[in-house]
Image 1 (cartoon, rainbow, N blue to C red):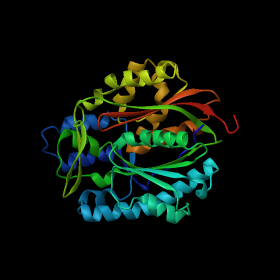
Image 2 (image 1 turned 90 degrees about the vertical axis):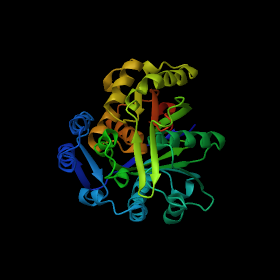
Image 3 (image 1 turned 45 degrees about the vertical axis):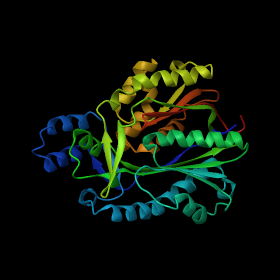
Image 4 (image 1 turned 90 degrees about the horizontal axis):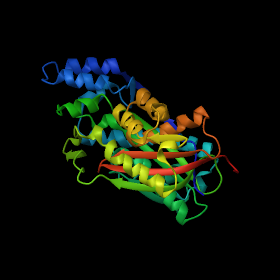
Length: 351
């Protein structure tokens, strides 16, 4: 049965703290009629710092979509391989043993996908299948795990490499001055994650069931306006309340597996913001401490989009609190409004 092994994570070297973000907002938008509201929302995110691929002064210039696309490609090629190599080492899998790459990113576009370049760069087999996912936003981390699980179910013994590359800073738009945009400017960070799903053996989350749920008629709540200047992130004020309608979907998936979602041993969920985690705690009836891994990602890195769930999972590995037989949930949330959910049992190699 497929096992999601320990993810490898990397964040870039340029750092901006929450205090620096607040001061920057005051400097750039002193006359904004809703500045105080935006500042309060940014403070309440709980984000202490974020990592960026470029200095903040460069990010603010916005040289245009052409140059940003070139930066996305160059930085992806410079940073992703080392993360993938580490993920392969942690899973004890050779590049030639990978049968599928699932690559997710919502912050830049390349064709052919980075998957083709990685196959050549890292010595994967020419027969390696490629599955790039570009339009599921933050939910794509969960979707990548689910598609890897599906592939391993269809091809027993196969190994899948998951790569999430998110450079959210390349989506900064200086002309977007709505409160939602200002909040996003203080919430999102850059990060890369990779993990291997092994078809046989391995230590980690043994994947047993997955599911997806779309809240009807909410497709405009999280979206991009694609313009000549690039991706303009649009966030509806109703988004923070989406855990109330999504919680029954999480509960239903668990019940299909004859589990109680409120009594699981571990929870790895997307941390879009603190209210997401607070509401999940309330509606699922689990203690706030259950989401400590996701909250730590949010605090230390900000919202790194599809990479959040993999970083949170890596933190659980590092804590070494999961024991053989522990039951858990992994879930990503994003545009649609979509939830991608996985259930699994912790297993050590050979168990």
